[in-house]
Image 1 (cartoon, rainbow, N blue to C red):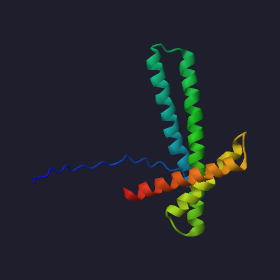
Image 2: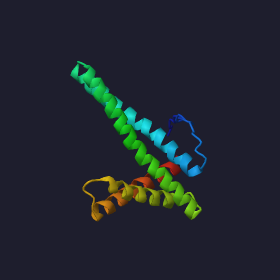
Image 3: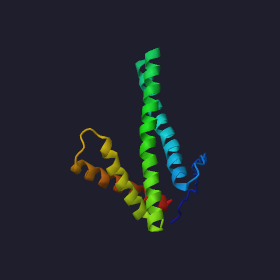
Image 4: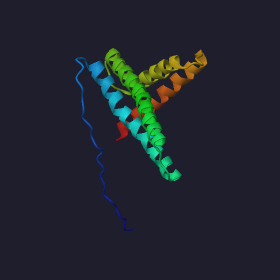
Length: 147
């Protein structure tokens, strides 16, 4: 039976902007903050633009609100990414390996650390956030290995 095959390839864009802070831990943390912060800002920006297009009228206040939201979400996403990349790097250095376990432990520590800034902090919420962070980081590492 004849079969048709489609050959395809997709190369993801690379963004290699690196700021040398003098130590690999700081380099990775700042790099993660900047790269993912830009993604968070772009996410907020596209949401705001979509909202403005649906509304069909744009005021100066809408634009100011959109810029503030972009900055806020960029910082939030960047902080999470910076903490995670720092924690994962620390786990890699402590364990001497780069594998899914380092990602899981880095994600769990990140999830736990992020609950400290919450006004409704409790131990159960911290444990849930640690489990969620570890699960997301492990899944991302498995997906990275597959590609």
